[in-house]
Length: 221
Image (cartoon, rainbow, N blue to C red; front, top):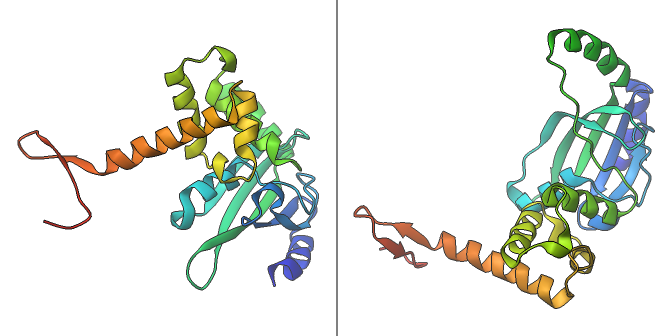
């Protein structure tokens, strides 16, 4: 139904608008319908970092409304991502509404620069290849560090940050991350299992009133 109506909706809003319909059950090619050409998406394109973060949150994911992003073509975009749920309230996709505000931001930047308040919008990876999105997440997490020179603890921290961003919800992401970190796939799997095990263990302990650490079982006491 949404695929049929986003075309007329976008036309009624004007040339500065774009609507993109995602099916998050196929994250590496989640775009199933597009109306408008703001970010130059097309059917079969991959999700962005926003989509990955929604996958990471699962059914607790919330809408992302009115955030600024910069497309690869240089356009500044005001975006909203509306989470789609089925009758069981399970998240399965999203409707993204993108408005090209480049001209408006250019005028605002001139005024803001005079007052020192201008904030550069964060670039967002709108791409046809999910590997580009994973690479963007890697760059953000590595922060210029050489992957081959990471210590074991630093590598675990990188994998933990990537997992929090939903990267490993993408099919074949593990091999791509392993290559980027200059480790074997087995080592990358070990890192992921380690950080997830640590996270699970941290949720099963709590501090008693007298300061002792106690383990919480699945049964209430």
